[in-house]
Amino acid sequence: MSFQIGKKVGRHVSLAIILILAVFMLAGCQGTDRLPMVSIESKDPSLTNPQPLENQDSLRVGISSVLSPRETLENYQSLADYLQKKIGRPVELIQRQSYKEINDLVRDNGVDVAFICSGAYVSGKQENLMLLAVPEVNGKSTYQSYIIVNSNSRFQTFQDLKGQVFGFTDPISFSGTIAPSYMVTQLNSRPTDFFKRVVYTYSHDNSIKAVLDNVVSAAGVDSLVYQYSVAKDPSLAKKIRIIAESPEVGSPPVVVNKNIDSHLKAALLEALLQMDNDSVGKMALKALLYDRFVMPNEAAYGPIQSMVNANSAIDQKK
Image (cartoon, rainbow, N blue to C red; front, side):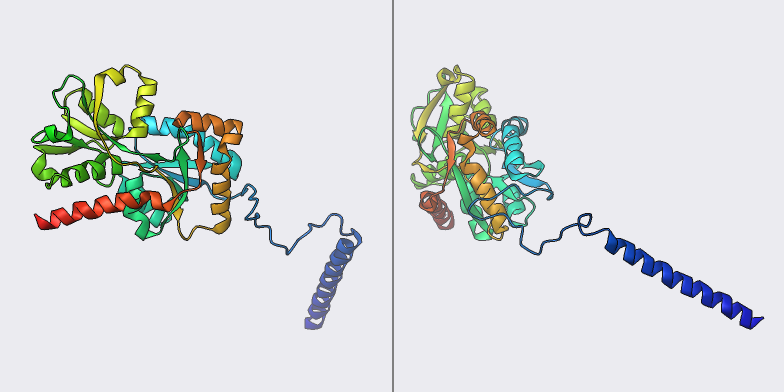
């Protein structure tokens, strides 16, 4: 009985071996034209002429709320469409209320690229933030802080604001906080001593509205946002007066983490610098009221650091 079982098992094993050999032989007879070609050459895009990075995760784009959240998202949607076309990835716009939160996302690789405020860059450049590009408007890649008041008010100079309620935007905003604080520093005072009270609006259009509604006596706003707002509503130019201006500094930049993949960095830079030569890119630039993006100048942000240092120094003296 056991001998018969052994013979059956042996026949099954032999048959299995024959079948396996037949499969390999048939595969070989089919030729190589039906088999996938595998290359060991690198498929990384060229650094000098980056190609779209297909089949990757979504491109995460951080945007600071320079304008109120809804308006910011609307303005950047065309930019998202353009980057998706050029980079070859679906684009995810990521917004936060404060500039520091966006800085943290860049530092921790929570976003791939971010559009931030100049003050936020100076605040975060020691935490792995690196300049990528800057917008150019009317032939300039600089901007300034405007100190605005209601046209119906009596205030004519910055000194007239002593004892008044002042509107800051974000704690690390250049135009909304750092520059106005520096103007107070130049008067040998501090904002908490010079003003009756300060309030944070967390967007420049909110600051403009606060001035119009007399919620605050004055506010510091981004000159680019002011120009954007007046372009949308020309009547604002008669309702608001500019009583002081800061020196010009580098425009709000596009930044990345210093450790970003070099190919993605090259692709992003190429996409931004070529926006004004692309139909979709031109639409995105128009929505933001930018002419184009250009290479950044690190030195243009030096005056902001000097203001931050001066503000800190007087805080330590008081």
